Length: 332
Image 1 (cartoon, rainbow, N blue to C red):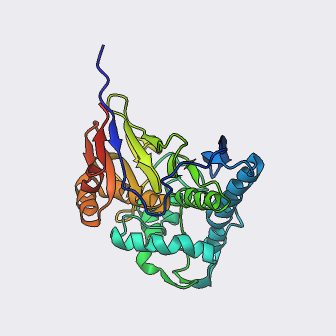
Image 2 (cartoon, rainbow, N blue to C red):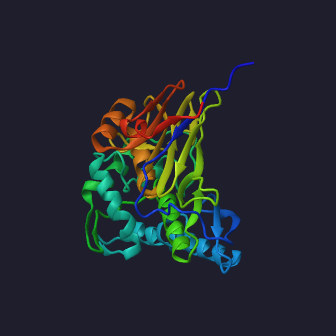
Image 3 (cartoon, one colour):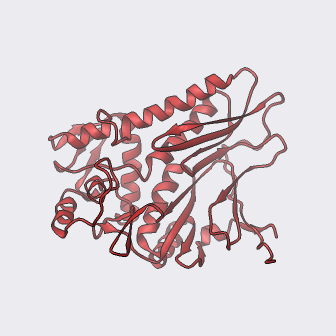
């Protein structure tokens, strides 16, 4: 019988505004769950007696509904759907829309466009958007046409005034779930349930501690032959990007993460990237960007920008960035 390898334990540094004391006496444990944004969500929390389960669920679903109304391309009257269909070059966007687009534009600049929120035309063309899946890759001419209306450098955002070329389609699938996680955490904290773990489709944010003073532990999914990776979260977001969502044609896999520099699905030596950041939206976008870069570029970028990431190569080799290495321990 093979010995079980020791766990890899990740201990992010303390966050100044995260609670370091346990929930108040009388707080009760609650587990809430549901479906939204094409996936599942779950929240584990310790709630004060005056907060009902119905009130907590209402706060959660209100934030989910808000994100869908802003950023879902599958909803015809969402803000992103209306913007993508608008013929005007210059438009006014809502403050909520700007709250996601502005930081994503900063991440696009930081990553040299490896993360780019303007790739909706390419996402749809490759069968990963509302038009539905496809059985074969698109023609080169189709890819060229989609690339011609894509690219973060073609966007100007000043306040809530947005300028972009007609035909450009925004796609927030790589970050909207992360933002939803963050907004749910803030909403729960705002109504007095500040000790919680929020998860949507594998993206997580935790705040506070359990009554026994233990942190919220989250496992990063890994192949069974590798040691488990356990992360203690309190005031941090965790997101993972991988190549499991794909279609096959002619014996080749086409993953859903698009490389903006080619217009084709990213194809390199990485199969999965997990990032820990100050918020889940940022972790989500950075994980996708590092997946596009490939191991060598991603490690160099993470080193220069202090990104805490765990990268998995095809074949199982694991890479920890320096910022992630500084967080590691071993429970074995």
